[in-house]
Length: 489
Ligand code: HEM
Image 1 (tube, protein in one colour):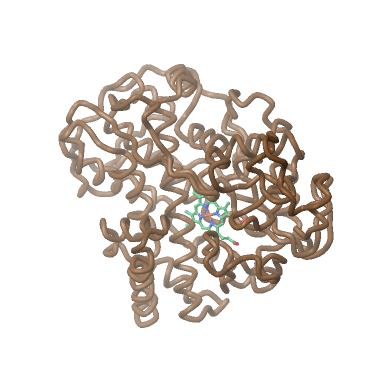
Image 2 (cartoon, helix red, strand yellow):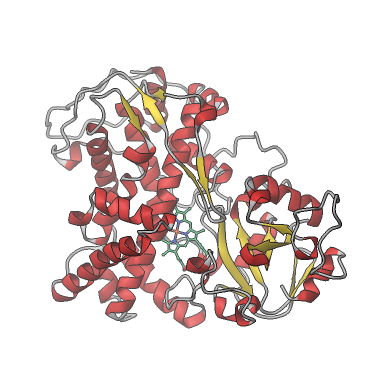
């Protein structure tokens, strides 16, 4: 925001602080709230305060008191995302950056720095780069990937099933998306603990983040070189052979974008769904009553705890208006996914079940809308379903209050999810893929759920190692499998 925008808050001198003893003490210049520091420990509460004070688009301050609009309204966020002539993702037009207010060591610099990748491009260049990504995605064999997700889940569960306890964040949610994405990209051999650790380390920004970045980039560069020499049936080769003619550097950068976009968010989604299923009485009741399926639980989680809380950032290409606010050319706007999802104008009752409604903001919208959302849903649907089938008696192994999150402006990450269950035998994961039970894919672009089937009697328990048979066993419906899990057999 420009200094003129500050005056919209009613404060004449944007640099003046509140007098001592004033309840506004602790606010930043212009009486604006800070999205960082001790007053921003609970960002969800802070967004609600901002909504009460300012409405659907609120002025606030980032680290170093850099001004930023926070878009809180559902409709206002969608309008911003869907108006590429007014708003873009190119930080090179952001006034505070141009004016030198944003220092090179700003903690949000990894989100701010512009790169020649589809996430920040616009117009024809965006179409070219995104076209290559979506073109490569369109060649993915979704049934095969669902089988792979199921097998990877079985492998991960095998590692802890005999112990009767596990941490479903560290031993499951953080591994499954990496195993699946390495397979999709074309480097299944690179999936291992080191790859997971390096990616987590980098996203957390620890002291070893630079070395970890080098490790992950090294793997992606090797993949690019290998596929340039010898194409195969994988995402990397498809990206390379797309008519958009990406250079090797562009290919590596887009493998990186896809891996990063996919990994962290999908890990968060799986952890959030499992936590809700294990702790939320509302979910328990609905699952027990057969009123919710795993895909519906996933969708509910995308409303209540979106894997990315905000996206940093959009920038105004011209003077414009949003939510009754005058936005100046070069102002920055935070895409507020979490606050947009709880906008009282679309969700007057936050406890109400969204019944599979997909109009949340978790995957964005407009030209940059997430092209990988079906893959993300597939990993979460199949992974959670298969895990609950293997561990029907799984329960939380701590008080719910003991669970903790690592929070940043971009996301909220469950630290661990300790669980207990009766020890189980290992399961054979080498069986023919067609013998794996794979939940059916969801209908594409489903907006609300179809009427639910009447409850069916639960089928007999599945043998831990189904014997090979010429035909795959008939898969029980999602509802029946859920009931079976819920009832513990
Ligand atoms: C739960 C998991 C996921 C969530 C919540 C998520 C969310 C998002 C959001 C909100 C955006 C738009 C950001 C913006 O407005 O610029 C986005 C973009 C993107 N996502 Fe996802 N994503 C997920 C999984 C995936 C997966 C699995 C893939 C790839 C297989 C993927 C690939 C991408 C790419 C390439 C973009 C950039 C698109 C563009 O700028 O045109 N995402 N994602």
